[in-house]
Length: 111
Image (cartoon, rainbow, N blue to C red; front, side, top):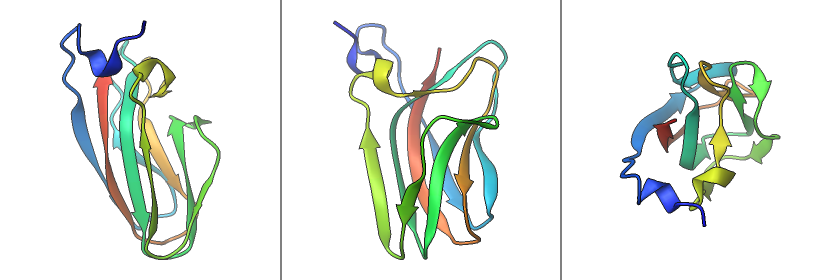
């Protein structure tokens, strides 16, 4: 059975803040050579109408999540094998479709 949030391997997730009002791709976690970024939890709230998606560098990891003012989304991957994973050596980006403030955070680890 997969290991929820790395309990048996003692992985401690790190956190990163999502805070931008720029449109387009915004780096949330910098690339680490030969490591993949595995997201185990994320949440985001919008101050206006926009859509967001996650990317491994420029490659889409998700489809668009449409948001309106004061509406957000929370995603928990209790089994990291089903979480968002970047390509090894690529940054994790959030892509904001409009110049609307979005905020939140992610929990992740490197593998």
